[in-house]
Length: 298
Image (cartoon, rainbow, N blue to C red):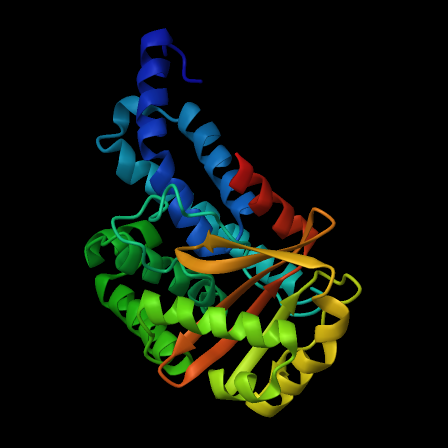
């Protein structure tokens, strides 16, 4: 704390930070795909804010956003190295967005699990530029200031990110069709109905299971309508009979929480285009699943 900062100054700093906190978390979560890591970034931002000469800060929100974004870039760079040794596919940590559908953003952009999964393939600076521009509507010149680059380069970063997402993700279906497809898929998966599965899945569908190395979770993606359908039919008799399902919301989309003997074992979510379901995501890693389940009851 700077010498001369009194209680009144700290109270004001606390109010300014708390007002900014939802946005700071929203930026960090979209950058990192992890609520735990995002909370760490927010906490580090608060510590730096406490130890800043705040009298020289004209716009607290802009200052705090800059700190949180740069910290997130640093964390993302180290996380990329860690995730190279991750056992099996890595999927973003789900969030219960039923109470806060935007998670600190003016719009719920870059929040769906499928988008966060694709953003992970961008470098951290591209990701930051895209999140600040597309989810939080920052003008290019302000994004450039935060990233310490030129406005022209910022436009290129956002353009590359948009092109990457467009190349990896087809046109999306509306929320009603999304839920209908998930309902049909769930019923067919539980009964092992091969014909229905082949009808509801897109030709290039990919199934990802994030188990963090746990037994029973596929450690490689399953690719293609035929392979995914047969895979689901093969494990249906072992996986589904002892389970119960519950409809929930994860990252702004319907999802299915799967439990056995009262304990959550998986969160099922899908991404869908007019061609059918083209991405299936099974979150089975307890380190990511348990916090989500606890947030539902909280």
